[in-house]
Length: 167
Image (cartoon, rainbow, N blue to C red; front, side, top):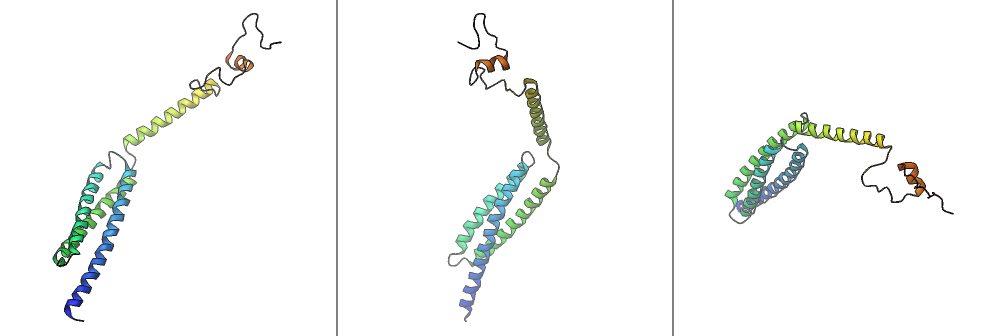
């Protein structure tokens, strides 16, 4: 093998290795995005900004990689490798911070929402107990009821001269 062929083989191996690393970066960014979504606001706002910056850098990385794959892109390949290393470090940093925030206690907003849900469900349970299981809204008194049922459940009284059973 001559030196030119050896350089081409090494460059091809480098391209394949970088392509695999770029694919891992894409996958990790998607995982981070979901992890940050689970954290919620306001804790995740700074992480979301950092993730958006990483997305911009990822697009630049892909563009530079495509340019480096063209003939004479050996010098650019080193720049792509350096940018890839930066993105991987920043990704790891964002990942560590997201893990830390996932382990922390819930935010005050989350606690307020959870307590509000508990109060509403407790109130609806009390309302059901008071009303005897009948919901006052969304149920018409006159739909799907017989005259006897209306009299028994809702206290409907017969008018004088009318009887519940017609002859």
